[in-house]
Figure 1 (cartoon, helix red, strand yellow):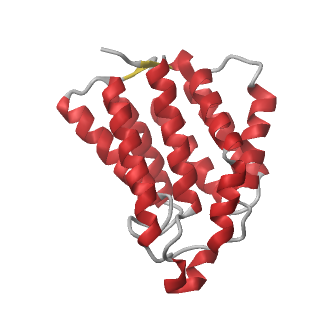
Figure 2: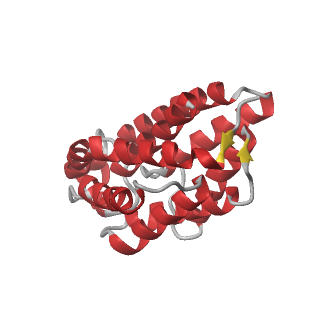
Length: 211
């Protein structure tokens, strides 16, 4: 059965970098509708710094996630740096001692990331945040692990769940962040964090499928 190797880290991390870089403007547009419009710029800054520092090196999946986490937590503005930094750091810790990751291990990584996030934010499913993307993705991988799905099938399920989760935020009222001040007027627009989270999860999935 196909697994993800720690040595596949560079392929996966650089796919994440590319996804953010290619969607910088789009993320800014989404965020600008009900936020301050800097989500794409800040995310692009962090991921591009990672590429500049580590793009020429080989690194494991855990080391890459941890290095990216440190950059996001310490070097970019806005609330999303600490949020994504925490998620990636917890994911790195979850996988650190495994040479190869099964579907269940990938689920555990994302679950650890979400648990770490819940330690620093109160947002939950339905609050129009990236949790609305991340939580169904974790659930999809749990179902895939329990049913014994192959890795590529699990990644397709992850993409579908993440996309549906992102799309669900369009009809939600924002409960956190700048957009929460708009109340009902925040409806009708995707959440920027949920959108970037979907981009990253789909990039991870596509990279794994390509291996």
